Amino acid sequence: MDIMQRIQSIVDDNPIVLFMKGTPQFPQCGFSMRTAQALQACGATVHAVDILAEPAFRQNLPQFSQWPTFPQVFIKGELVGGCDIVLDLYQRGELQKMVTSAQTA
Image (cartoon, rainbow, N blue to C red; front, side):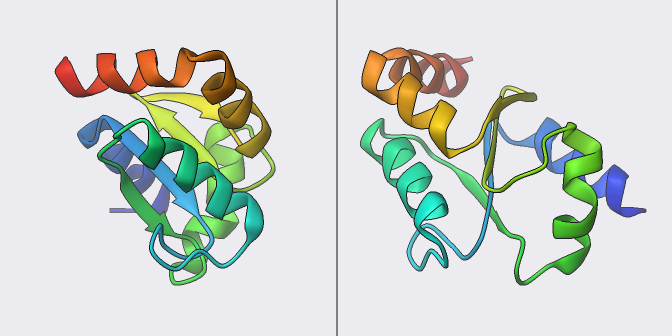
């Protein structure tokens, strides 16, 4: 399976995916940390992918998603965005709704 197929499979097989630097328990950048914290605050069960441990993801994910930066959050197969967008959604209460919908579907 090539890397694009692996990315697609991960996004398809998990309701909430976080491609990040590090892990939710040990984030390796502030943006990844804040994104993971917002998702955790919503009670999200997240499939996290450490792009530092898997360089192929880091190289190919921007092409897959058409989004140049990390972290990247996918909910129900759709790109939500990065840190700023996720934090904005969290502050408006929208992220909670998205997480709840994804986990009960």
